[in-house]
Image (tube, rainbow, N blue to C red):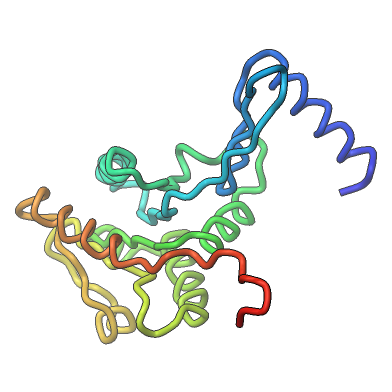
Length: 191
């Protein structure tokens, strides 16, 4: 970003904060007004969860999004996060790259449909290669009785959100809670 662009962004940020508004930097945290006319940055510490689905399953993906938010997670759903005019393929890749968990919603509609769900799944499988083997990253979720691709089911246990949504959702939350703490700054002289 050029210096003039950076200065314009900083000016917009300052104007919003001076009006008393909070400004969220997606995935990083929130700038907000503080005491005595100062501002503070509150880093995002809630685990990030990318939700991948096909459009025909949007209502169920929305339910999952709301449930995860209610339990203190920061879910990422295209319908909620993408802005008009935004380069959405790149925004989706960036969201997958920085997410703590990738939840792939499988259904009969998703299993055989070509399109962005398959692309997101392939990209997440590539990103998963960088995650230590003992950590959970990609969580397959079945929304109904359906086939999970062999490349996924061969290595990863899936969770069923049917016939009992609440029981399946509790199992999903249990998997999300196994996330190791995010690495913090290394102490001086530490390894």
